[in-house]
Length: 544
Image 1 (spheres, rainbow, N blue to C red):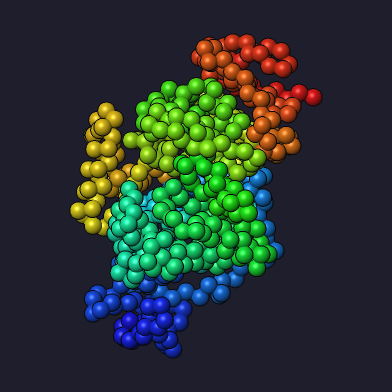
Image 2: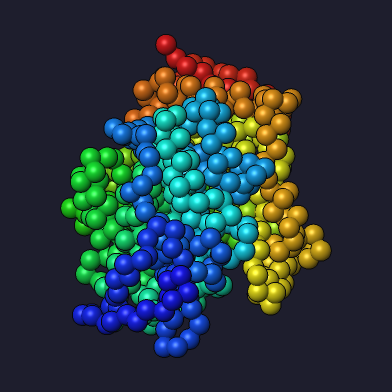
């Protein structure tokens, strides 16, 4: 249906239906009626101005006036990444309003801006991981052209853009994709239900749907890199794994465009095949998030030892993470009740993205507490120094650098009242099992849960917020100035520690990062002799 007029499509080879409608063009609203049913949006819709249930709108991607000709992103290996959520990054929560903060990010020393999913999802606000229309930017954030304007502005400031994409499931509301073909299979099951069909009958077209989506963001929106959500949830026994195919086609697009493109995986497999090159029988991802580094550091700072954190808690774990990338590389995991992972051999630390916090590690806590809510300013400075001066690619979560007072909570705006009720009840039940009072767990469906998660930018210049921002700026400048801090050589990291006295020293080239996790001041041995460090504090010494 186009403009209220129905047109009949014809089935061609391979079960694909097609029709040329002369009067349709950019700005035309349309939808598909299957077997006499309701009119549905296009699964490949480029814009959903009326939300997940409404008509789709045609977009001419070639008409946007780009100004970034000749743009090349900095290598990810030299990057400092900043993860943000469009809806809470600014008060207005739009693509256009985010442009106003780009000078701040460039001045901070950020090189790559990682944007949480912007695909169309149910409701006016949410994290974006319950997407329904993967090709369409969320209409409440702005139009496709406004998203392109944000990316164009990032490039004008020297900022590369990474987009978070979700190919392991679709959201529970507005997911009409199964009605159009065998995009899901009951052969495998995931935490979200039937798995995406990557290796069963009809999987050629299903794989094409997701790979074409990735290529669209890279090509039509000038995105520089993609972060692939939870690739451990992919079920694919094909001879050529989905990730390998995606890697190859992204590389081919990069060659065609003459522009550096890259892929980052989120994976808890601790499997180096994910980040090995295809010619070394890997999947060809350029990097992966390193949860082990976060867990080792976080457990030491907070003493948390429940859930998956039970596998961590020693300074030896932190040293292993710095030297090997994974803490678990074939070792027995008590949390999993089995051996987990495989050793990383011959790979640079540049293949790992590390963080003190991210949207998951903050937002999946009952109250959405940030690291700044859980530890002292001194302890956060320790965490920032170890992350920023590590052999890995550091990533900040929005507001972390100025010790934001606002939480980042789990929020949804499902338009189905029954679903919204189930989400709220499920959230309370989940944390009740950990001993939380259900009344203290914020309701995801309450608009205030969303509103209180918005950053307060006035804090940037105030008191301890300004002091923390200055510390992050100092660390970023040091990382950029000292070649030994960006070489990615994990095997050259020297880590010394005392589990009882609770101190840790990380040495990289001429730089010693001397960390006192103890509450009392103490003298800590370094290559330059004893260094007195106040309780819950860090000193950075640079040898000549």
